Amino acid sequence: MVSLMQTVQSLCEQFKVPGLHFEAGQGGLTKAVVATPVASGEIYLHGAHVTSWQPAGHEPVLWMSRSSLFQPGKPIRGGVPICFPWFGPNASDPSAPAHGFARTAMWEVAEARPTAEGGISMTLQTRIDPFAVRFTVEFGSVLRMTLATELATGVSTSHRFEDALHTYFSVSDVRNISITGLEQSRYIDKLDGAAEKPATGVAIEFIGETDRVYFDSDSECHLHDPGRKRTIAISTSGSQSTVVWNPWIAKSARMPDFGDHEWPEMVCIETANVGVNAVELAPKSIHSTTVVIRVQ
Ligand code: BG6
Image (cartoon, rainbow, N blue to C red):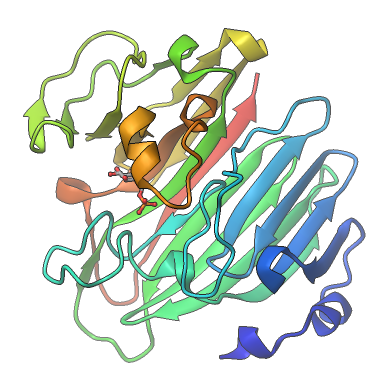
């Protein structure tokens, strides 16, 4: 694969953009490092995995586990894993990796350029048959991420996929935050036998393990964190589902790449198309799933 052969040095020569360089990251995996006056950030070629974003004047927005693996074939824990072309366990093959192949695939850098406001935009691409996928991330005063999926050349029938930009947010304490914007959406409760539950009409607060897939949730969400004195706005397009997850105590202890005591520090709000919102993709069409994250 091309990206395995791309050395850090040749990437630096190929993509000469002020404020961007490539280096060997944890586990010897190649990462791009963004350091500009408007924002800093990092993305690994392994999984096209964004592991940090910090807009100027604010604390880091994304959470990373200190127990994360950085190994070929293993997902990174934290940041923004890309779940694709399925979400969760594979419906027909229990031996297939959870959340699909994208987060452990090697991606290649297709483009890197400065943005008008002085940040950096990068596009990484890979092929996961029968799909060709491009992931564009703009590290700026906002973090804009788009997963664009089309059928690979020569594929002439429609194919269905699920996707999720599985964003881990850093919070002061998950027990003291709330999420608004999903009050009117029904959801699947994965902790209650995947039962469908009606819209609650109230903000989400966390008093235990939480694993919910909200459907038809195309509005903007807000993550309110009084401990950090900040609200994070999460606006999406091309996404009909939102997954909200915190593993709490027992599940954290079961996950080898997640510290036993890290669960209060994070919450996942995932921009997704899953289950009844899976995308049926016709030849010659492109589906773009976009999230824009802004600190307020
Ligand atoms: C969430 C799922 O999106 O991801 C949870 O809803 C799952 O059920 C979590 O536990 C983490 O998944 P993984 O495969 O990264 O451990």
